[in-house]
View (cartoon, rainbow, N blue to C red):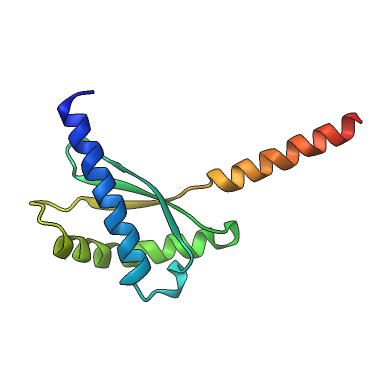
Length: 116
């Protein structure tokens, strides 16, 4: 691992924690309640951050709209919390891993049931 990727990993972890805290403590948007920040990927030039969030599948569109609306507010809070020269632009994505795993589990259980 190079120093650059180690640095990016460290920045990613810091940014993930800050974004999670802002979502939990500083936003008053009902659409963003009960949302979990599951990951963050920072571009090599640190200009963009892809933030992955988990939420109940029935709320995907609502939460995505909430984050689109809150992007600039979150970046503002990041600029206040971090002494970085540049705050990355945020792109929010719904992390469907839990829902995908649940569907796969159901499919496998159903397949096993049909074999018996």
